[in-house]
Image (cartoon, rainbow, N blue to C red; front, side, top):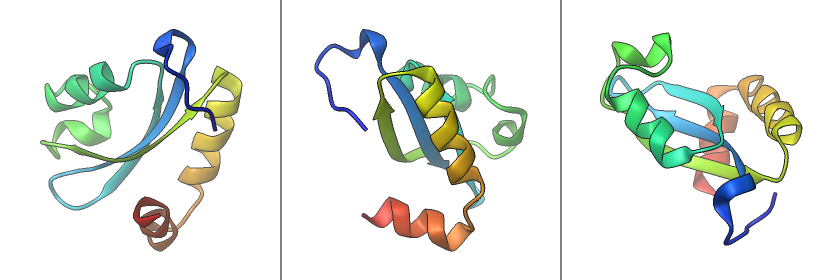
Length: 88
């Protein structure tokens, strides 16, 4: 995970909480824009009927490949494991 002032090459893995309490994990290279897209109903099909969504957690990576690998690992976690990750 990296934390860099120059956000142009940052890739994000994020967890959002939907209005029904479910969690959704995704990847993006523009976190603010992606959350706004979700909340406008143009994000993932899963979130469209569960609006609004709220950003609960994110991690930053220097490459798309790293971020996608981490996204996959998070998606394999149980809900309880994701909640523990969010709490940290």
